[in-house]
Length: 230
Image (cartoon, rainbow, N blue to C red; front, side):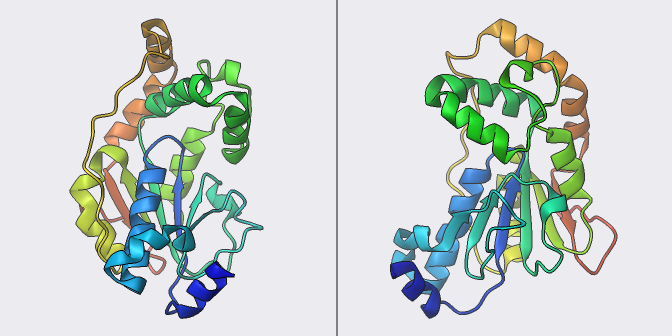
């Protein structure tokens, strides 16, 4: 009831999708954008209404992508509806960092979290294979979203987010404020041997990711990429 009332008060705006390969800043980015949408619509105290301006959309083909909302997903770009008329922000980072973060999350959140995360990312293998190959389809995510045509897409590498906050704001049409940047660190749940193994497994993909621009902008009416930031 409350959400329906809030949505009725909002001016119609295109839906926003925040997609990512998982464990690469999508929650941070989604929350910051949702706060900005709420503030734009309800004023200075709007951030308290974040729940009304964000949702999870783990199945893009079935979930309702509504205006005035920020939809977080890990779905593949091939699942985006043909009639989608909004903006996509894709956040990515080092594949080895994302995979190691999943290892940490297993210890912190348990098997149920792992099961859901693997489902959300359309995994093609088990947790035990995570250190052996790209079971979470990171490369497919990155290649798919950064080359997607016919949509407005802004792809941002995690380490470049703060350098491109102005680009993000311009892309969305309103000011977005990110929280203070903090260095990403591994915790006690990830031992040095596991780190070394994952760095080797994902080494080629990590090098590919670091060779990419940190900011890639694609417009639906253009077939070329632009790199407005770092």
